[in-house]
Image (cartoon, rainbow over the protein chains, first blue to last red):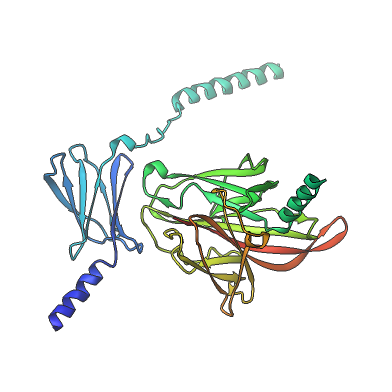
Length: 132
Length: 242
């Protein structure tokens, strides 16, 4: 009876919190974040990378914040996260919804430098003429 | 003559009923990227009767304690000036938004009205922190999870004034009646409950839709045309029943 009560208590605790998975793209990497409804991260939880046939490609672990940044995800279709005690969740990688990151526009510093030098020379010549 | 009398009666009833600063998001639960750009409408209206009033440009619509000020776009709601904004939610979390309006002078009631409504959104199933105050001077803290209620559920809240429980405060309640419901009498349009000694109140939302709760605290004075008038401060919260 005690064992049954203990098992019931354990199972009730297991279902008290739902495990969630949030997938996004960050700096060209796949951002994996797993957390409970309460806001607690799924720390050091098993992350399984599955291909389009649902076959396991690789296993990883979330960090202390429940996060993982995955650089190579081109053969991965689905992510499965498992917490201690059997809590698990999964999510599909939605490449379609990948937002285009704003390209970092580099200023053409070489062209700017040339224009600046020309301007300085012109000002110098102008001042010389005024002095004469 | 009959038409005139009924028109006057209707105008009278409209003035008599409560005006709410209505602040409605397009959803209170963001569960996908498609829903992640939340649209907000801020309007000064009679929610049950679905009649509008002019809302002058607010000081701002903010995320959490003025962490971020959202851009405002003037729109027309119920044939009156209202305001709209959007916010893109990028990460899981509980997001609290509020409107800080400019106090409005109500000549019929001879007082200024300053209602600050807030709206709480859960993104990607995160539920942490819905019962925490933003830190507004007048604020309603939900005592039940605010973004997962059904019609028929009780909504309980705590009214805070300067962070302390406000007892014996009237809380006006109205449904955003987009369903064309008819009230049996004018007194049924605005429901009223009062806070207990701990600032708590409860109300059963008997219909689906958005419900506005306005805790009204008269405090302070403001000058209008050389005369001082009291300010009716409102702590508002908008809750959706499914």
